[in-house]
Image (cartoon, rainbow, N blue to C red; front, side):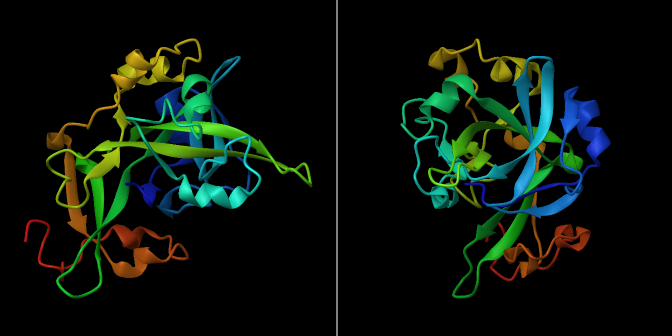
Length: 234
Protein backbone atom coordinates (compact mmCIF):
# COMPACT_ATOMS: atom_id res chain seq x y z
CA UNK A 1 0.00 0.00 0.00
CA UNK A 2 1.16 3.51 -0.76
CA UNK A 3 -1.41 6.16 0.14
CA UNK A 4 0.88 9.16 0.78
CA UNK A 5 4.46 9.89 -0.14
CA UNK A 6 6.98 12.72 -0.21
CA UNK A 7 9.55 14.13 -2.60
CA UNK A 8 11.96 16.41 -0.78
CA UNK A 9 14.18 17.61 -3.61
CA UNK A 10 14.21 20.65 -5.87
CA UNK A 11 12.83 20.61 -9.41
CA UNK A 12 16.27 20.99 -10.99
CA UNK A 13 17.48 17.90 -9.14
CA UNK A 14 14.80 15.81 -10.86
CA UNK A 15 16.21 16.60 -14.29
CA UNK A 16 19.71 15.84 -13.06
CA UNK A 17 18.69 12.46 -11.62
CA UNK A 18 16.55 11.23 -14.52
CA UNK A 19 18.09 13.08 -17.44
CA UNK A 20 14.73 14.23 -18.69
CA UNK A 21 13.16 17.42 -19.96
CA UNK A 22 11.07 19.02 -17.22
CA UNK A 23 7.57 20.03 -18.30
CA UNK A 24 5.99 20.71 -14.92
CA UNK A 25 3.46 23.58 -14.85
CA UNK A 26 4.62 26.80 -13.29
CA UNK A 27 2.12 26.52 -10.45
CA UNK A 28 3.61 23.23 -9.29
CA UNK A 29 6.14 23.37 -6.48
CA UNK A 30 8.84 21.20 -4.98
CA UNK A 31 9.80 19.93 -2.47
CA UNK A 32 6.57 18.20 -1.35
CA UNK A 33 6.14 16.60 2.05
CA UNK A 34 2.64 15.09 1.83
CA UNK A 35 1.56 14.08 -1.69
CA UNK A 36 -1.99 12.69 -1.55
CA UNK A 37 -4.35 10.90 -3.97
CA UNK A 38 -6.09 13.29 -6.35
CA UNK A 39 -3.12 15.67 -6.39
CA UNK A 40 -0.63 16.28 -9.19
CA UNK A 41 2.89 14.90 -8.82
CA UNK A 42 6.01 14.53 -11.01
CA UNK A 43 6.17 11.46 -13.23
CA UNK A 44 8.96 10.36 -15.58
CA UNK A 45 7.82 8.79 -18.85
CA UNK A 46 9.14 8.12 -22.35
CA UNK A 47 8.70 10.59 -25.21
CA UNK A 48 9.91 10.82 -28.81
CA UNK A 49 12.93 12.83 -27.65
CA UNK A 50 13.77 10.83 -24.53
CA UNK A 51 12.57 10.91 -20.92
CA UNK A 52 10.26 13.73 -19.92
CA UNK A 53 9.14 14.82 -16.47
CA UNK A 54 5.52 15.92 -16.24
CA UNK A 55 2.94 16.49 -13.50
CA UNK A 56 0.08 13.96 -13.61
CA UNK A 57 -2.88 13.34 -11.28
CA UNK A 58 -2.44 10.51 -8.75
CA UNK A 59 -5.20 7.92 -9.21
CA UNK A 60 -5.37 6.16 -12.58
CA UNK A 61 -8.53 6.68 -14.65
CA UNK A 62 -8.75 4.09 -17.45
CA UNK A 63 -9.64 5.46 -20.88
CA UNK A 64 -13.02 3.68 -20.88
CA UNK A 65 -14.20 4.98 -17.48
CA UNK A 66 -17.36 7.08 -17.36
CA UNK A 67 -16.62 8.67 -13.97
CA UNK A 68 -13.29 10.16 -12.95
CA UNK A 69 -13.97 9.32 -9.29
CA UNK A 70 -12.72 5.82 -10.03
CA UNK A 71 -9.23 7.29 -9.69
CA UNK A 72 -9.51 7.35 -5.90
CA UNK A 73 -9.74 3.54 -5.95
CA UNK A 74 -6.78 3.07 -8.26
CA UNK A 75 -3.93 4.91 -6.58
CA UNK A 76 -2.16 1.53 -6.32
CA UNK A 77 -2.04 -1.52 -8.57
CA UNK A 78 -0.84 -4.98 -7.53
CA UNK A 79 2.25 -5.76 -9.61
CA UNK A 80 1.41 -9.46 -9.63
CA UNK A 81 -1.83 -8.95 -11.57
CA UNK A 82 -1.71 -5.48 -13.19
CA UNK A 83 -0.63 -6.94 -16.55
CA UNK A 84 -3.90 -8.88 -16.85
CA UNK A 85 -6.48 -6.64 -15.14
CA UNK A 86 -8.71 -4.62 -17.55
CA UNK A 87 -8.10 -1.53 -15.42
CA UNK A 88 -4.33 -1.58 -15.93
CA UNK A 89 -3.26 -4.06 -18.63
CA UNK A 90 -3.11 -1.64 -21.57
CA UNK A 91 -1.06 0.87 -19.57
CA UNK A 92 1.17 -1.97 -18.33
CA UNK A 93 2.03 -2.79 -21.94
CA UNK A 94 2.32 0.71 -23.39
CA UNK A 95 2.37 3.46 -20.73
CA UNK A 96 4.77 2.70 -17.93
CA UNK A 97 6.39 5.44 -15.87
CA UNK A 98 8.70 6.18 -12.97
CA UNK A 99 7.43 8.07 -9.94
CA UNK A 100 10.22 9.95 -8.11
CA UNK A 101 10.04 9.84 -4.31
CA UNK A 102 12.20 10.17 -1.24
CA UNK A 103 9.85 8.21 1.01
CA UNK A 104 6.28 7.26 1.80
CA UNK A 105 3.97 7.16 4.80
CA UNK A 106 2.31 4.15 6.35
CA UNK A 107 0.01 3.86 9.37
CA UNK A 108 0.55 1.34 12.17
CA UNK A 109 -2.37 0.04 14.20
CA UNK A 110 -2.33 1.27 17.79
CA UNK A 111 -3.42 -0.54 20.93
CA UNK A 112 -6.95 0.82 21.24
CA UNK A 113 -5.94 4.26 20.04
CA UNK A 114 -5.56 6.05 16.71
CA UNK A 115 -3.16 4.73 14.11
CA UNK A 116 0.43 5.99 14.30
CA UNK A 117 1.87 7.33 11.02
CA UNK A 118 5.41 6.33 10.08
CA UNK A 119 7.75 7.74 7.47
CA UNK A 120 9.51 5.02 5.49
CA UNK A 121 12.50 6.04 3.43
CA UNK A 122 15.71 4.79 1.97
CA UNK A 123 18.68 5.43 4.25
CA UNK A 124 19.53 9.10 4.40
CA UNK A 125 16.41 10.09 2.50
CA UNK A 126 17.90 9.19 -0.88
CA UNK A 127 15.89 9.72 -4.06
CA UNK A 128 14.43 6.59 -5.64
CA UNK A 129 11.92 5.68 -8.38
CA UNK A 130 8.67 3.79 -7.86
CA UNK A 131 7.32 1.77 -10.78
CA UNK A 132 4.08 3.19 -12.12
CA UNK A 133 1.58 3.24 -14.96
CA UNK A 134 -0.06 6.27 -16.58
CA UNK A 135 -3.19 6.74 -18.64
CA UNK A 136 -5.10 9.30 -20.72
CA UNK A 137 -8.81 9.90 -20.05
CA UNK A 138 -11.36 12.19 -21.68
CA UNK A 139 -14.59 13.28 -20.01
CA UNK A 140 -17.48 11.75 -22.00
CA UNK A 141 -19.56 14.96 -21.89
CA UNK A 142 -17.24 17.96 -21.60
CA UNK A 143 -14.38 16.47 -23.60
CA UNK A 144 -11.87 17.67 -20.99
CA UNK A 145 -8.81 15.45 -20.89
CA UNK A 146 -6.79 14.26 -17.92
CA UNK A 147 -3.63 12.22 -17.49
CA UNK A 148 -3.27 10.13 -14.37
CA UNK A 149 -1.00 7.53 -12.77
CA UNK A 150 -0.91 4.66 -10.31
CA UNK A 151 1.85 3.21 -8.10
CA UNK A 152 2.65 -0.50 -8.49
CA UNK A 153 3.05 -2.44 -5.25
CA UNK A 154 4.64 -5.73 -4.20
CA UNK A 155 5.03 -7.69 -0.95
CA UNK A 156 6.84 -5.64 1.69
CA UNK A 157 10.43 -6.43 2.61
CA UNK A 158 11.23 -7.74 6.08
CA UNK A 159 12.04 -4.27 7.43
CA UNK A 160 8.72 -2.68 6.45
CA UNK A 161 6.43 -5.67 6.94
CA UNK A 162 5.72 -4.56 10.51
CA UNK A 163 3.96 -1.54 9.03
CA UNK A 164 2.09 -3.10 6.11
CA UNK A 165 2.19 -6.25 4.02
CA UNK A 166 2.67 -4.23 0.81
CA UNK A 167 5.20 -1.62 -0.35
CA UNK A 168 5.84 0.28 -3.60
CA UNK A 169 7.90 -1.44 -6.29
CA UNK A 170 11.26 0.37 -6.30
CA UNK A 171 13.29 0.08 -9.50
CA UNK A 172 17.10 0.45 -9.49
CA UNK A 173 18.54 2.96 -12.00
CA UNK A 174 19.86 0.15 -14.20
CA UNK A 175 16.24 -0.86 -14.92
CA UNK A 176 14.76 2.59 -15.52
CA UNK A 177 15.28 2.67 -19.29
CA UNK A 178 13.92 -0.87 -19.73
CA UNK A 179 10.80 -0.07 -17.73
CA UNK A 180 10.13 3.09 -19.74
CA UNK A 181 10.75 1.52 -23.14
CA UNK A 182 7.33 0.94 -24.81
CA UNK A 183 8.92 -1.60 -27.15
CA UNK A 184 9.33 -3.95 -24.20
CA UNK A 185 5.92 -5.60 -23.94
CA UNK A 186 6.59 -9.12 -22.71
CA UNK A 187 5.00 -9.49 -19.27
CA UNK A 188 7.59 -12.01 -18.06
CA UNK A 189 10.53 -9.63 -18.41
CA UNK A 190 8.60 -6.79 -16.80
CA UNK A 191 7.19 -8.87 -13.97
CA UNK A 192 10.71 -9.98 -13.08
CA UNK A 193 11.33 -6.41 -11.92
CA UNK A 194 8.38 -6.51 -9.52
CA UNK A 195 10.24 -7.47 -6.35
CA UNK A 196 10.72 -5.91 -2.90
CA UNK A 197 13.61 -3.51 -2.54
CA UNK A 198 16.17 -5.02 -0.09
CA UNK A 199 15.33 -4.38 3.56
CA UNK A 200 18.87 -3.21 4.34
CA UNK A 201 18.27 0.02 2.40
CA UNK A 202 15.22 1.10 4.43
CA UNK A 203 14.43 2.83 7.69
CA UNK A 204 11.13 3.84 9.29
CA UNK A 205 10.25 6.08 12.22
CA UNK A 206 7.08 7.62 13.76
CA UNK A 207 5.95 11.08 12.67
CA UNK A 208 3.23 13.55 13.64
CA UNK A 209 -0.43 12.74 13.00
CA UNK A 210 -0.61 16.09 11.22
CA UNK A 211 0.32 14.08 8.12
CA UNK A 212 -3.20 12.58 8.26
CA UNK A 213 -4.53 15.75 6.62
CA UNK A 214 -3.31 16.59 3.08
CA UNK A 215 -3.75 20.24 4.03
CA UNK A 216 -0.47 19.95 5.90
CA UNK A 217 2.60 19.95 3.67
CA UNK A 218 5.71 21.23 5.43
CA UNK A 219 9.17 19.91 6.44
CA UNK A 220 8.15 19.36 10.07
CA UNK A 221 5.97 16.43 8.99
CA UNK A 222 9.19 14.41 8.68
CA UNK A 223 10.35 15.12 12.23
CA UNK A 224 10.51 12.01 14.39
CA UNK A 225 8.08 11.88 17.31
CA UNK A 226 7.37 9.47 20.14
CA UNK A 227 5.41 6.41 19.03
CA UNK A 228 2.29 6.02 21.17
CA UNK A 229 1.20 2.75 19.53
CA UNK A 230 3.74 0.44 21.15
CA UNK A 231 6.67 0.87 18.76
CA UNK A 232 7.35 -0.51 15.32
CA UNK A 233 8.15 -3.92 16.68
CA UNK A 234 6.10 -3.60 19.86
